[in-house]
Image (cartoon, rainbow, N blue to C red; front, side):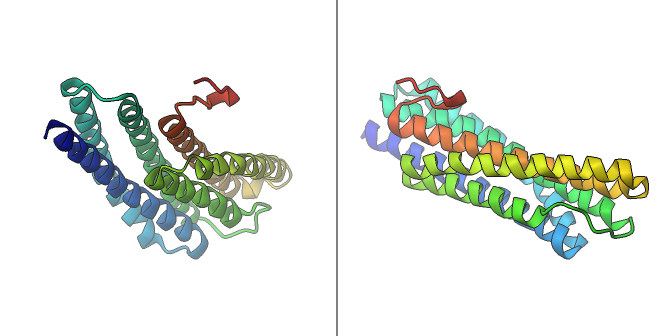
Length: 221
């Protein structure tokens, strides 16, 4: 009976985390869509969702800590709870990055539109794919799928580096475009950070399922 109750608590913890993950994914989608469509109502929706995401982070953290304090979990369950604690933090920070994108899109809306040498939609597509795959890996306990997320991180980093080079060059050559270029540079950085957080989630899934620490490309069991 005690084990059944504990398993129910683990299931509740997972369910709450997935609800929060859904809100964060939605915020990222809305923020990046706002950049493409210039639908500024989407930016307000992103900003309005931030308090709910923050509240859920605190609730999930407390539930996980309560389980650690009151129970004596087996090794795999202990790794799961620790993974949830880490993933919870990364999700909240993704929400912050989405809010940051929304703020910059609103700022861009107050400026004249210029063509910029950066493919933000492509970067957003890759970062969103990383988030989606890392969360699917968590849902399914699939370490192989989580491993595939790590491969995408290099692509996101490369596009962000290209954006930095292209936009800083543009700022030097066309100072009148500097405000738009700076906002877009920050959006690129926000998306790169979202990819980093998705990588963290994937690494936590691998740790939970395999008991292997793959952070910093170091594997320990």
